[in-house]
Length: 378
Image 1 (cartoon, rainbow, N blue to C red):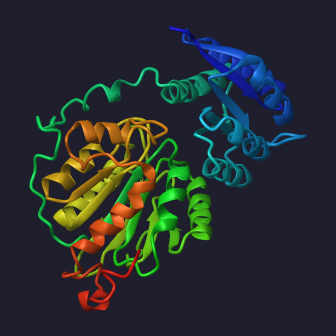
Image 2 (image 1 turned 120 degrees about the vertical axis):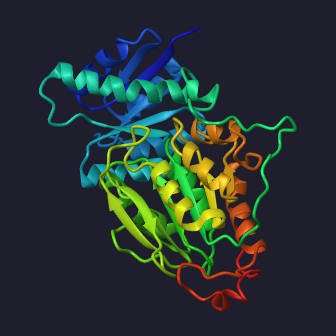
């Protein structure tokens, strides 16, 4: 099998060398070139024909954002991994790049003890992402995670009965390719949407706040980074903050957010499974789970719990996913409706929330408040 061809774009000689050394250790990867700024990189693409590009955010002449803007119209399918600093400026630029079509990102190593440690950290984080984006070494696509129950019915349809209870909450799990996917789904949610929306996007601290702010600017509903004690209300969305698991508790009619720093699950914090598990406990069959593009299997066990309680599960299809790991695992376990293209997800969310009416209280709000809205939001 041919090696994965990588073009490294970074203005730092040290970083280019670090990346080259880290990637060259893998027998499946070949660094075919490098560039010190975006303008040179755009010329190199035609010369070296890379399978994937690592792109620095901050560069002279042509920075990462402008390089991405110039690159995407001509190379819409070429995987791009942003390489940024864990700073507020770096987070803002990276989130912007991801919403413009970059596929993933890796943070530059900071506070490492040696070049060797920095190289190893890059190798452990960057290599799996390169392979996932190039459809290599993706064991989670072959079968459900160990311990899960394969529920795929012979007919290819769902093999469980849905309770058809009114949906009181929408929960979304997403990872690789997530910001761009969310930028397609969330802006289609209308004002007056009668239930709250919770989102887990695998991102570090600082990045999730930037993502929430950018989604708010392009959406018709407010998107906030979750805070401990926030009371959920209809027509708003909350994103789990980086480095914190986000859960819900429902002591009465109202539902409140809780945050914790319990150990990572599926190597993630925040983890989709943690949030989905708490939603399944609090809402049972009144939850709608949505799994969008992402690497790994986070969300599989949470979807299983929501599915068992009669809730609904939607997944993005393989063709429109950057990586069909998370949605693929849920789909192949027989837990979801037939996979949907990304541009069909928001319409199906609205349909499922509206078609079942609002016969029950939603996060402490009387059902009568929404009696005239079930057929109006679109």
